[in-house]
Image (spheres, protein in one colour):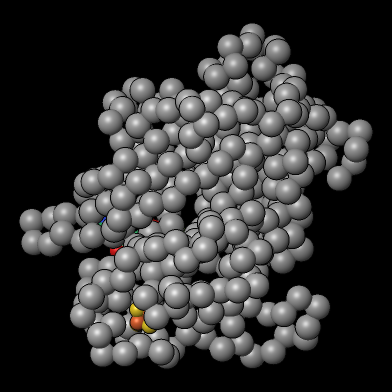
Length: 340
Ligand SMILES: Nc1ncnc2c1ncn2[C@@H]1O[C@H](COP(=O)(O)OP(=O)(O)OP(=O)(O)O)[C@@H](O)[C@H]1O
Ligand code: SF4
Ligand SMILES: [Mg+2]
C-alpha cells in the first residue's frame, strides 16, 4: 500500500482499561431460537476473550454459529433468536443487559461490523460519501463539511482510487471489491475499538480477496483495533489471525494462538479442517473433506457433538459432552482424549 496514503489520527495501541480486562469477554453465551414447537440451542456455553489490538479468527462449517454470535454481540439478533444465557463484557459493560438505545450508541462507534455482502450495510439510495459522512457526524461530532473531508480521507485509506470523485458514487456504481472497501471505510468512520468482519472476502474473486485481506492487515497495523474475523476457511484465517476459535455445532471445540493451532492442532475436528487447506506454494490437489454430515444444531448427537464424524471416537464419546479445558497456556480443547 502507498505509504503516502492517509493515516489514522491515533496509531498508538489503546491501553487496557477496567482493571486490564480483555476488550471483549464472552462468558458461557447461550443463543436460542424458539417457536411454539421447538427450542433450538444454536450456541451453547461459548466463552472466549479478545484483547485490545488483536485479531481473533473464528472458523467452522456452515451453521456452527459464527454469524449469530457476532449479531448477539451487536444486539442485532432477530427474533425468534435471543440470548438465553451468559454474559458479553465489552469495555467494562455487559452488553446483553443494555437497552436497544444504549446498544445503538455502541454500534458503529465502539464496535463496527463488515458483512460478506456490502449491500446489507450500504443503502442503495444514498452516495457512499453521504453514508460515510453520516457515521462521522453521528459518532465523531464533526460538522458536515469536516465529515465530508473525513469520508474522502477514509476512502483514500481503504485504497479507493480517486476518492474525491468516488465519494459521489452510489453503491451500484462500484465494483464488488470497491463496495467492500467502501463498507470497510464506513465501519472505520466511528473509529471503533472492535471490528467484526463476517466473511468479508468470501463473495469476491480470488485476486480481490487477497487485496481485501491485505487491507485488513494494513488497517490492523494502523488502527490497532481488535478484529473478530469470521471465515469458514482456515487458509484465510492463517493469513490474518493472532488467535483462532474453532466452532462446531454452536460449541467451542478448540481455541489457541494461531501458531499453536496451525503447528499443533489438538481437536480431531480442527485436524480435519486443516487437512482441507491447500499447502501454501503447493500445487492444488483434490482436498479431503471431513467425512459425515455438517451438524444440525437442532438435532446434535448425544455426548460429544462430533462423535459421529470422529475417526478416534470411542463408545463413551456418545455418553458425555466434553468440557472445554485448557491443555497448555492459552490452548483450550473440548476432547478428553487429547487433553493430556
Ligand atoms: N432465523 C433463524 N431461525 C432459526 N434458526 C436459526 C436462524 N438463524 C440461525 N439459526 C440457527 O443458528 C445456527 C447458526 O447460524 P449462523 O448463521 O450463525 O451460522 P454460520 O456459522 O454463520 O454459518 P455460515 O458459514 O453458513 O454463514 C444455524 O445452524 C441455525 O440452526
Ligand atoms: S470426545 Fe471423542 S468423539 Fe469427541 S472429539 Fe474427542 S475423541 Fe472424538
Ligand atoms: Mg454466517
